[in-house]
Amino acid sequence: TPRPSMVCCPFGACWLLPFLPALVRLACSLPVVGPPLTQLVERFFPSLLGSKKAGRADCCPPGSWPRLDSDEGHALAGVEMDLPGGVHAYVSRPKTPTGTAVIVVHDIFGLASGGRARSICDALAADGFLVVLPDLYGGGDSIEAHGGVEGLRSGAEESVAWLKSHAWSDVDAKLDAVYAWLMDEGVPAQNSKLSLTTNRIGMLGFCWGAWVAAKASATGRIACAVHAHPSWKIEPSLFGEPVEGMAARIRVPTLLLPASNDDDAFRDGTYAKIIKKNAAVAVEAIDFPSMTHGFIVRGSPSDAAVMAEVERALKASSAFLRAHMPPVE
Image (tube, rainbow, N blue to C red):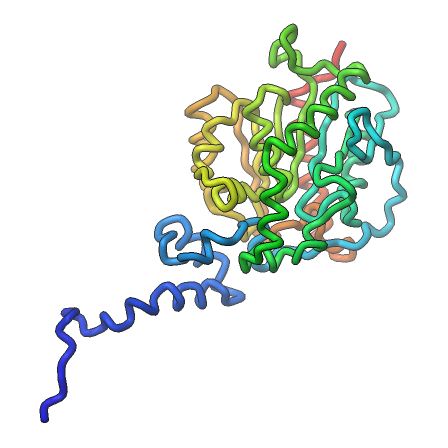
């Protein structure tokens, strides 16, 4: 009896098609080729990721730095305080007030994480900025209490729901309290009586915090923003808008600091072109090809190469913020 032939496909491989999404997801999970392959597939063939993409929250890509318990060798100069409005924050003041301020936005691990966020605040304060690091999750909460980063990647219901609960409306309400406090401290801020050039509040966001910076950059409330190893894909993952749409609404000078496993669109000019097309503002990008996502705020303090790149990133950030927010005379 002759064997039946497969005539559904001229290439004789149509039987593989039902398994293609699973094979692609398997390849994307591999440690070396996974991250770049995931970026390629998500950008050009997102349907191949199927329910995995629809049900997960893109934040820290595979190979990112984990939470840093403590930043060794740094005695903190700032103070913990509750701002009016009930927002807890770490505040670091300059020796001589300059009328300029930076809101530092924590990463997915929150304010309670050890990390390097507080010592970064102190470094910016030493450069003349009044720096505030607010707890935008509230109560010292962190992704670690809700399934961790792996829960987000796998689409765990608790992890995704928790991060989605911190939508822009929730975050923006907390930032309102921060803006008000900075104005009470004498920092010129955007309101009905001030132009954007008078505004002296900038923002530096890490990971999830860079998504916050991107959203804030469309409000007119900040003068400029630095995006450190940005996690802009949170917007399409959780809230359904393409990254390109969010980038198109940015209206302030922008500095992008991508690491090697961050989206190539940060370094190849894709997002910069979108921002410039819709706003006549400066957009810069500094690539860190030898670093991985999270290195600035979570990279090991005992790794000399990492710390050298952390210092380079912070110097560039401070210079950018100062260039767009000169001291108030």
